Length: 230
Image 1 (cartoon, one colour):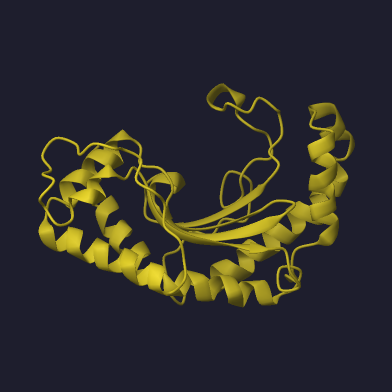
Image 2 (cartoon, rainbow, N blue to C red; image 1 turned 90 degrees about the vertical axis):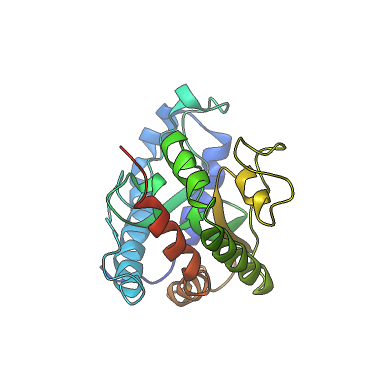
């Protein structure tokens, strides 16, 4: 399937979904979603996945829902937002055998206002958080992460704010890189207004450039994930 860019009709569908966020409305208009969002997303995963093999030959790019594509239905059990449908479209490529959300990944999403390109892991669940804190107690690992994050920021990308205010057990304020222990996620990202590039095949090259700029972070996180204990 050839990827020619994301569709303006897909963004218009999301605008209508914001006004009609019910399962009944969605099912009545599912054919629009399939044609203008699902098909371009599948084509993007196929094209982007092949391109990312330049960086990671073992990258996982699965052009299906619950693979590289996220479900449109929201799991309201774990969300403060109880509307049944998501108002953004997410796409992920990941490395390793762990769950996709606990793996070093490249991430892309868009909504009616903007698109977002990121590399990293958006939330550490307890086993990964435990492994992360242990991993950065090694000064070399912590120093490398610090330098990678600084490089990402110098390139014009953003990083998340620390989640915790206090240092966890085992870290001291005087330690140079102890601030890293306050994070429960590590990623670099940038947001962009919907533009002509988004609606063309050039978005593949643009996303690849961002992923490539932050690839040292992907590699660092992948090595971290190999230390997680079952």
